[in-house]
Image (cartoon, rainbow, N blue to C red; front, side, top):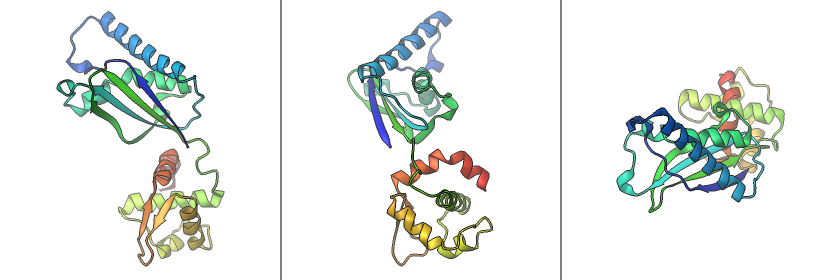
Length: 207
């Protein structure tokens, strides 16, 4: 995984609370997108390989915080559009990290763009290892708690003979952490959460 952080000098406002001519709104969007591209150019025009996870932070004086979450998400529209254009993906293909839309107190209006390239994530696992991980996450999200070794062994989608081997591999590769002596003592690491996000569509189909 490779992380890119851009500091964009632009003011993001709650669009739903602004009554203005469409031309003024269009100009503001263009200025916001230009600011994002400028930040990318200043950073050396790095090549960002998809898929990517994204986190955006609006920086303003506290008195200018947007209180409504939906309005906060909406204020990032131009930023999202330009990030997608830079990476050359559809904005629907962007993966949203936990806490993807935030605000932070600051003197000067700005936006912090944090992009994490997930390209190659999971390439250190075998095809069966990926399948095991997807079934693991599928059972976990359905039941609300991590499956046991016995449950993974009896899963009707199972094509593996030794689930213990796959648990050990996922732990060794840094995708999960396990608590010895606990049947459900499994925790996803940050790397594991990112793999889950990058495989979200496949995991949904696996249910």
